[in-house]
Length: 84
Image 1 (tube, rainbow, N blue to C red):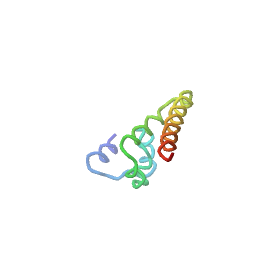
Image 2: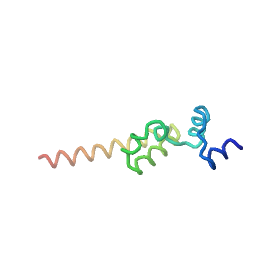
Image 3: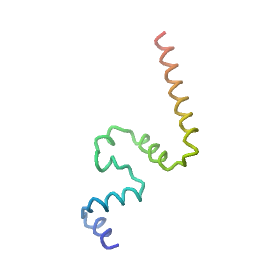
Image 4: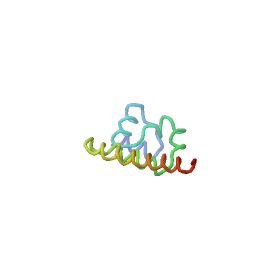
């Protein structure tokens, strides 16, 4: 507990295994800490959706994938109408 307090209050940098465990326990995106350029490129909403997707139970993923496929198809249809 004291180790975590030092990290939080004194800005101590945790050793790698502790950092990885904290990231996993908190459900944080690993990219934010090991490749922050990727995170800067994504909008805040895209980051939120990504975090929520990781929390979703496997059985709901086909529903989510279907919604994404539908949105992409709508975008493609709109683009085709624009080009016509």
